[in-house]
Length: 132
Image (cartoon, rainbow, N blue to C red; front, side):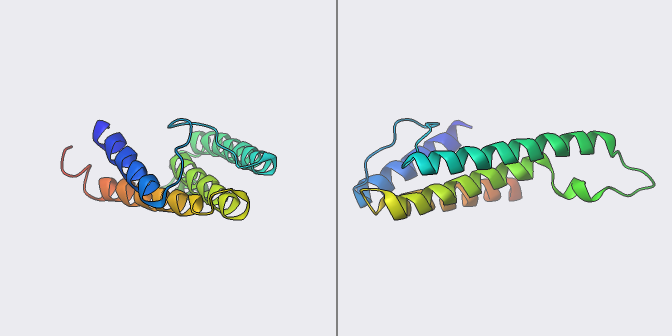
């Protein structure tokens, strides 16, 4: 896990330095470009949390019957959590592109998102790079 954090932090620092974009407050900070961004972001988060709880209830009830699974098993809560991260980061990039003082901030956000997706997908496809 430390390797992942170091890779993401190093990539972020490199991109911010290269594009001359100021650093955000913290790793898990609630950075909103403006109030409109904050309202939209929290609306999306609440919708995803409700969907995740709904699917957890459905998946708990819908145990495998007759060898078939329900349609909702394709929407596993972990997939929705991954989708939440993608949607909120794309929203952040759009708001940075539209409203931020430094217009290059959205490039950093999109590159961090792309790097994170590549990192996570490669970890799962290679069984955590052969470590496990």
